[in-house]
Length: 362
Image 1: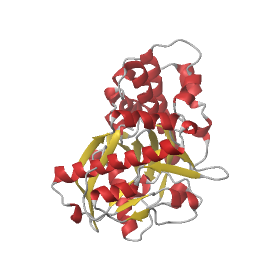
Image 2: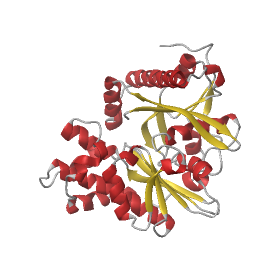
Image 3: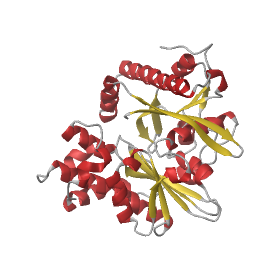
Image 4: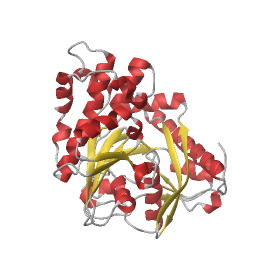
């Protein structure tokens, strides 16, 4: 929730190439409002929801404008914008499963003068799937190697893992928290948006009793396909587990870092049956040196590296995935992988929001 990652993606039969990238911060007030909405969804009125929907759409449009300017790209040369939106709620199980992302694509199309493909997850949910994770299909398309098993971990707010078999098989699921709990603790104890390079975690000691309580979360033991989000792993989840005992802030951060590393590593060995030869990490977690160190300790037989080693910078992979999904929509090709999401079959994901008359700044 720190902002918008935007990439300019060239898609050809021979593969994909990133032509440029831009990070666009959320305005502080909007970020705070979004964090509040995710933490207390029952408090969000329809009026507030509509306002946030437009404000996020305006921010996404501003990110597109900045990316086009920095790359010298004319809007009319861009076939489509793939917009994931900002997830507020993800509840893919139950009597009426749903997933909710905001960031009005009509606003983006009108401001940018480019067709927008958005709302990628709900069709998969309607087809009986989890609607997540969707990035494994992209991982397979760009990182897959014939005859070689490749493991990819996407560590954003939530972490997910992809296992691409050398025979073309694909499995993956959300493993649990990525950065969300560590970021929450850094904001609470240091007033910083995240634990830079894992420095706070590296200065602390893991609290074994607290780690055991964290690892007892029932979601971790669920069979896959499965997915989760900040509607589960948030302050309301963490605080009762911190209620007993007195700990130094750095010890809590060390324990949260170990929780992410352990839950992710155990999920990888569950999928692979053993430690893979290599694990490639993308998302913000790839920049957390302490997390990467702990992953390496948990997976001693694997070489843990970021996806830059495979040709895409770790902070650009997820944005590239949704640009790729927009391309799949335009070509009428499925974007989900039923073995990952559990959907009844392959589906073309997303909806089209046609461009406006021309680029317009809000």
